[in-house]
Structures are given as C-alpha cells and as structure tokens.
Length: 136
Image 1 (cartoon, rainbow, N blue to C red):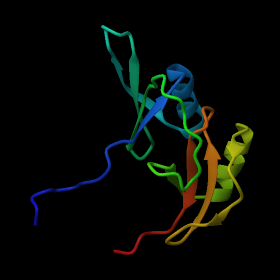
Image 2: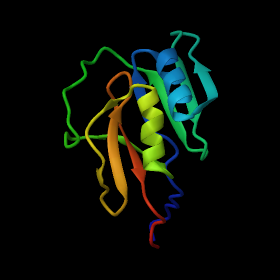
Image 3: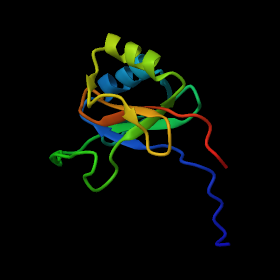
Image 4: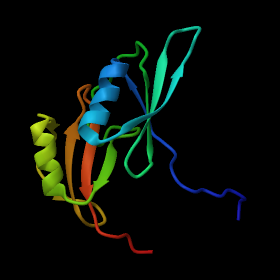
C-alpha cells in the first residue's frame, strides 16, 4: 500500500471565455447550482464552483488567450465530461428543448449502457451516459 487514500474526483475545471454566461448555461440546462464564488481582488477574475444534484462539483474559470486547438474525442488530453443520467431518452428530449449541438447519435457505452455526445455553447464536449449499477 502506498498510503494514498483516494476517495473520488472532487471536480473538473473548465476554462471559458464567458464566465457568467457559461455558469448560467450549466445551471439552467444541466441542473447545476452556484455553490461558491471566488473573486480575485487583484485581477478582478471570477471563478465559480458549481454543484450538481449529486453533490459533484464543476469549476468554471476564466480562460487565457491560448488558442483552442482543434480536437476530436481521441485528441490527447482530457476529452469530455460524461454525465451519468437515469433516462437517456428523457435527457435527450430536455436538451433538444435547449437546442444543444449534438455530436452524433446514441451509441453503446464502453462498459455497458448507452451514450450520446453533445457540446456546451463554447464547444466543450460532454456526454449523456445511461448505465446500470457498476459491478464491484
């Protein structure tokens, strides 16, 4: 044993151009709520920690001027954020009402279940993932 007690992922961080707009989108469309706001007094930059209904967290932070590289699902680095949901068909209908841009059709999920890719307003890839209980 190495002494590390890993208890889970605390949060992914998402660097965006429009902090307030993207924070509102994740809250209104995906059901997050504003949990904690950090404001750097020296720079004026704001960072939001959002909380999902399952208490997982998402950090929305200001991006810098680095150009966004073109990427696919298979481009090196973090690829997407997969959101586990109970009913994929219901979730698709909900996101259709918000005119999300889909990244393909429903397909089998690796390890079981069904998945469909979509994008947030700034082009970050997310997935809806319907999966049964994981075997232990």
